[in-house]
Image (cartoon, rainbow, N blue to C red; front, side, top):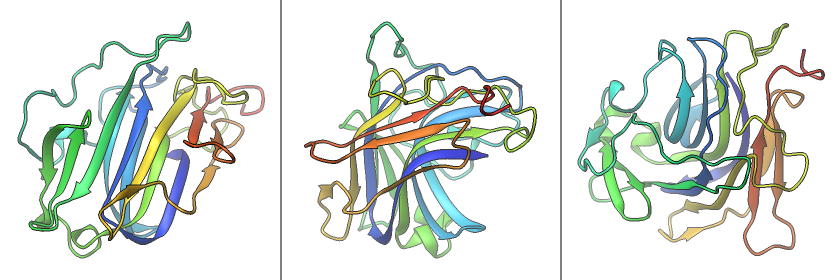
Length: 232
């Protein structure tokens, strides 16, 4: 698994939010996937809990579980079909289509709720499925892309794409793209995090570009083609 993300950590997070463009990246093998997601995490690097929401393009789903195939999530609204195809998707000729996701902790029940589109509470992860960690709060919030393949970090590298499949070399919305990124802290007010760090685990394969200086609303661009002349 390889990430290209915007990352914040260090305080008690009670939620995270973003708007993300939707794409249909190429996935090379049946046991691979490419996803763009908001993730809240707690725990050590090699022993952590996380909850995620976004969109994914995957093969046979043999690499793990998604949506209601994962134990624990309780769906309360059927306005959104989890795991169904998203339509329309963004296109390189300019059709901008995005989805909005918000994960937040209910302080009365300690459950983590998933909200879509700014108003639809799809369901929740019960607090009882978490021991410590996310049972209390998140320590990290991430925005960005993830590719799973047995051929990341190897040669030949996978051709599975991230985001739109394009590098965010120039300022363009025709890449993996997120905006309106927010965290929910102890104040229970949505705000942009004070400190963020953008990084890619395989920069020649999947890149990041964070635009946050001197603009009112920061943007985060990410993605790439996987295998290419710099990532053979």
